View 1 (cartoon, helix red, strand yellow):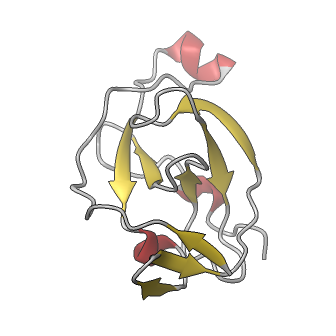
View 2 (cartoon, helix red, strand yellow):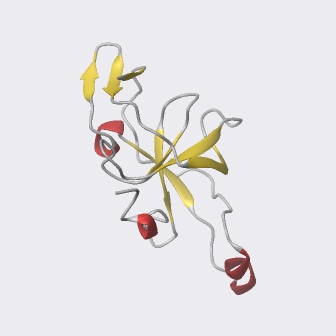
Length: 118
């Protein structure tokens, strides 16, 4: 099991806009998305402990261009829904915070991968 240090409760605060558009989106001018911090217990099955949130070893699907809004130099990792992972999300390996990427209308940019790695 991985141990995550205690984190303050997420405020669901939107961070600065992040550009993550593919070439077709750039040509059509589709808007950027915002990062929203998520509670780890909402995205991964685990156990809260005095030392933090303990979860089974969760594998990432890759490193993204987007940087953690807290660490500002750590690249976020994509985590797909699989085994103990409840929903797709972005994870910062430096501070262990979890994020969703949301379009301006509030919908998740990660829902297109709803089937995950099952």
